[in-house]
Structure formats: C-alpha cells, structure tokens
Amino acid sequence: MRGGPGPALSVEGVSHRFGAREALSGVSLAVPVGRFVALLGPNGAGKTTLFSIVTRLYHTRQGRVAVFGHNLAREPAQGLARIGVVFQARTLDTDLTVRQNLLYHAALHGLPRRVAMGRVEALLARVGLLDRIDDKIRVLSGGQSRRVEIARSLVHGPSLLLLDEPTVGLDLESRADILATVRALVRDEGISVLWATHIFEELQPDDALVVLHRGRVIADGTAAQVAGGGTLEAAFRRMTALEKAA
Ligand SMILES: Nc1ncnc2c1ncn2[C@@H]1O[C@H](COP(=O)(O)OP(=O)(O)OP(=O)(O)O)[C@@H](O)[C@H]1O
Image (cartoon, rainbow, N blue to C red; front, side):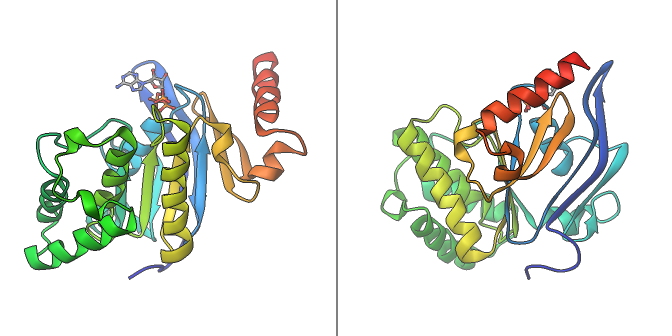
C-alpha cells in the first residue's frame, strides 16, 4: 500500500542534543508522497542526526516524526515498515554475494524465501546488476555496491527511501548513475525520497529542497526558488554569511 494520510515523511519541530552540543534545533520538513526531496547541508549540518531520529536509532524527546501518518512515537512498527534506508557508511557484508546480502535482509524482514528470491532478482534488474547476483560484494566497484544497497533498501517493499549522502566517495559517472537510479524510482514507482547531500550539482531546478545549516532549516522551496536566479552555491554562501553576521 502506498499513500495514506499525510505526507510520506513529516518532521515537526525536532531538536536533538549531544550533551551541550545542539545538533538539531526545531527542524521541520516534509517529503510529499511520490516526491524527491533533497536535504542539503555541509558537514556537521545535522543530516545524519536527523536520519538517526527518523529511523529511531535516536529517541526524539522534542518534536514529532510521522511516516505516512504514523506517529513514530506511538506507532513505530507501522511507520518503520514503510521506510528503506541507505546509510552513509557501507553496510554490506563484503564476503557474501550480492544475492546472499539481499536474501539475508529479506529474512530479517520476515519475507518468505520464495517471495524474497523473486523480489531480489527484480530489484537487481531495476538497478542494472542482475548479472552480478552471484558475485561477492568485494569484487564490485563502489558505485555498484551502492546500487546493491539501494536494491537491498527496497527488498521489504517500503514507500519512503532515505539516503544519507549515497554518492560520497564515488566518481562523477557513478554519482550520476546512482542519482538517475533513484530519480527513476520516484518517477516510475512513486517512491518518496529524502536524499541528503552536500553536493549542490546533484540538484535540478524543480527539486524540492530543504537547506540545513548548523542544525537549523535555513531555506525550504524548490531548488530554483532557493537559488533565487543565481547558483545554489552562491545562494547558500549568502544565507550562511548572513547567519554569521547576525
Ligand atoms: N554521537 C555523537 N556525539 C556527539 N556529537 C555528535 C554525534 N553525532 C553527531 N554529532 C555532532 O552533531 C552535529 C551534526 O552532525 P551530523 O553527523 O548529524 O551532521 P551531518 O550533516 O550528517 O554531517 P556529515 O556530512 O559530516 O555526515 C555535528 O556537530 C557533530 O559533531
């Protein structure tokens, strides 16, 4: 089932501290159903902390997070079942094959093996890696491993995909490839996506964009609106300079 009440992801007034350090301060954003939303912020902006809250790795004490209308504080299982995640750090077992990694993930989600086998093959075809299904992860390139992680994140049939800087460390071609794969999931399958990045060039003018800086949302709109007629990078520098001066 896709859709349901409310946006795919709704974050309202979320704050988080690590001791004295405030990593997030009153962050609100939404990922509408079937949209690609970019969360743009430099290192340390709070992107990973936000992902950790949305995936319930960290407990939210302040604010509210809802996934397809399920408040994660009250209905965590229903909300989390709809989420697929590609973490910033690599999380595949390099000594197992592509197939074994994905089947293992499917088993963790309680999928019957026969259903899982079919789904794994379909997803690998989707990310262009069906011919590598019996290769060990260790022989794949960085970009190919990322595509396997994207396939794995979809094995349990989520409708909201969270990707935390999935293109970091990849060459230009692999970056473009990963981005195209994810945009196709949005366009063809109606998956809702929150894509965290610090790379301005990954955005298209009509992408929905949330700019995070030092734990606060400093801009929200389409990339073209936020860029304000210039480049996104120039707009970002202007906004953060204004903040420093304030
Ligand atoms: N476990 C932790 N303990 C203490 N401080 C932390 C912890 N995790 C993150 N922080 C701090 O919280 C702030 C936000 O970090 P976070 O990793 O969320 O940012 P980010 O936008 O994901 O950055 P990056 O692009 O480098 O991953 C930073 O100041 C960071 O040093």
